[in-house]
Image (cartoon, rainbow, N blue to C red; front, side, top):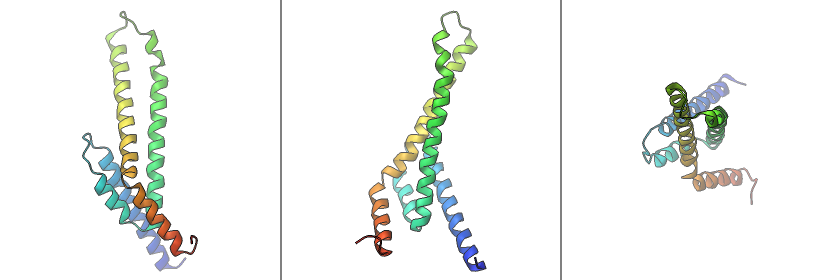
Length: 137
């Protein structure tokens, strides 16, 4: 790889990383900010191969959120054993687990909604890229 190609690849990686950080920051907002149009603009501003990498990472992030929820559900299996005689700490811990689960679910939802709101545009862009390479009629 030539130094010019190295610089181009590094710049593409930097753009992808910056876009991913920006999208994840929107997804972590507590309010439903309606930032999906901004997320779409961020993704559509990337080159198709950069966008594909970011979309794959967003899906991976949503899968990680699901794994976290699975772990939290496993921790809540002991909830059946709690009763009116349980101490305050045990009940508070169970409540915090539910809060954590809700937060992980909300974040996964926001990540996927940011993609879903512009999915047709991503698909059209991908089709155009394949067509331009002669891979589609």
